[in-house]
Length: 265
Length: 128
Image (tube, rainbow over all chains, first blue to last red; front, side):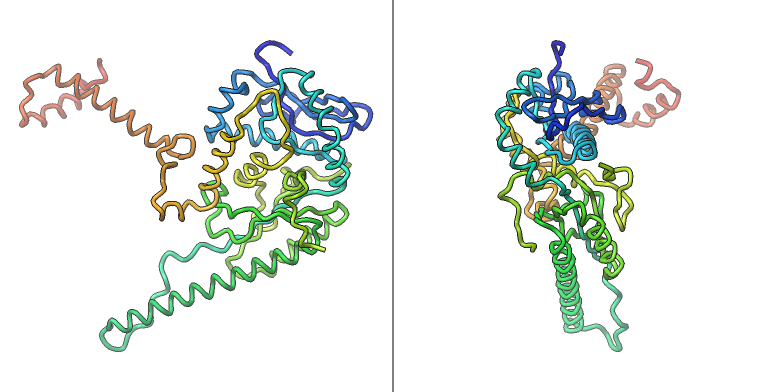
């Protein structure tokens, strides 16, 4: 460890014997190589990052810079992803968990021993899938009204507006029910679910209304079932409906026990 | 373990694309194991940031309806460093105007045509 460097920790797993090689292509938040540090029966994936970016003051400023945050978030996710394929179960640490040196990291592994053990036991053999459902964006122009037989009256206008509003409300209700049905079907295959607030277009890059944004904790042996079911739901989805599957993710949404809503069998 | 890694085979049935920024941020920012690092980030700062993002993530339109639009001028959140660009451009133009006025202090209004000719001749502000 040289001056001007800090140790960034990405994920914690059980130390499973001989050190695993993290592929060279997997680089961290500062494009640094990633390695394993083992202590107290656990293995942490870590990388050396410049203090100029990750010490307290710098970090606070940079977290407000969306371009920097995006780069770091993607780097973080890249390494956590690697951890998922390297270990039977890996716990993702929250973004920007940083230590001065390996001593600090070891202290953390010792202190967190019990919590890590419990979480790893609970989550081993399970992965997280993300599913978002979008309705097509509302058409910019409502369909042109039928040609009026006489000169248009105020009453015609109001009647037409009312019909358009009722049609839009009926669409929204139908879409809401369809999204709910998707969620119920998938929740039945999951051990736990977590609902996120809807995503908006600028960040997600999707036009349209986000009706469902959920994470599902699924046992690996049911992964095929789950993805197949998503594919089926996609095929059956009404026009304009978009179902998007992401994953398998490390069990980000389920590392703490309480937020899991076990509304699935 | 031969479990597929997430990005390369991104099995997104309808899109064929991987996780988007919103998918990633909502996970890495405030999910995952929260454990003390040596570098203490004020959690409040992160929470504020998360709130800011959530506002953007959750409902830009709704917020706009309510007249909340600070992120449009917030360089950390607006795609527009646009405002900043405009300000800088404005400053450059002002500087150039000042230079031109210095060169021809008594520029009469009717001579505006003449200024354009001079620039067309390649004798505008660039040569300074």
